[in-house]
Amino acid sequence: MNEKTKKTGLVCEGGAMRGLFTAGVLDVFLENDISFDGMVGVSAGATFGCNYKSRQIGRTIRYSLQFANDKRFGSFESLIKTGDLFDVEFCYHTLPNEIFPFDWDTFLDNPMKFYLVATDVKTGKPVYHEIKDRGDNELEWMRASASMPLVSKPVHVDGYELLDGGISNSIPLEFFEHIGYNRNVVILTQDSDYRKPAMKGLPAAKLLLKKQPAIYTAMEQRHIMYNAQLDYINKREQSGEIFVIRPPKPLDIKRTEHDTDELERVYKLGRSTATEALSDIKDFLNKP
Image 1: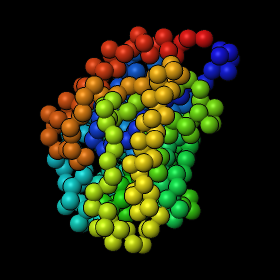
Image 2: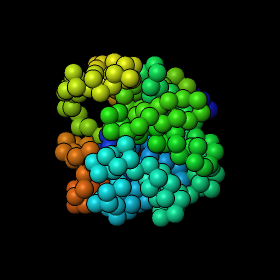
Image 3: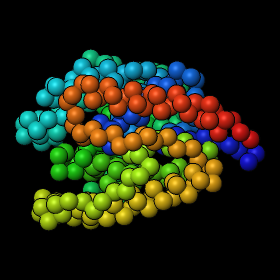
Image 4: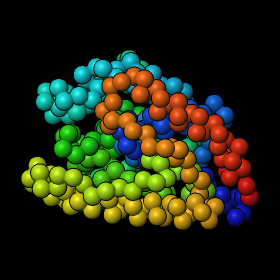
């Protein structure tokens, strides 16, 4: 590959609180000056991953630990009260604007491009969005990418009605390759033996999603899409065309984990996994 045409990319899977594994990896990247030309995140891979572009080391784990037992930060109380498992006003306005300010200046000054994935409620297809401005509209795109079906209201932004990006494109490596990123690091939040099973409770989900039939269809087929993506990633990894970082064992953490010891365990595992792979990652990114 000609050095002039090399374009490095970072692809971050979601997975709710499994995303703290990714947060640990990204903090190690920041501490060791590992950079990329572009990044794409899905769900937690976007909402946690944005701190990599803003270079805010430790921000994700700090607010996750501080608000682990706050009912506004992922609880059924919030779901009943607001219609969203994660209280929108708190998580996407109060927290990033007042309590743990998101560094928009650094985010926008960083030349790395940042994309996220959401799912169009009307079609069930992925929508890709590059964040290149600041403010509440872009935070709505972040929210859309992480708005899990059945426990979140659809997000209306820029003419779209959107839900979680993982429904339609859980690991957007092929998207990144398609737009020109040809030296990619992929951060997964499942171990190497994982295969996604078919969704449980499909009849109930079909009833609950009767006004969102395209979302139901995408969820019904999600395990097929996801496992095909794993097959593709494994093939690309074995040929040396991508570098994959994944947990060495199942993370075994709840999607809305409130135990701070568990949150910190997963974050530290991401850190240790990235630290062990640092030399190989640098070699992969720097090879001609």
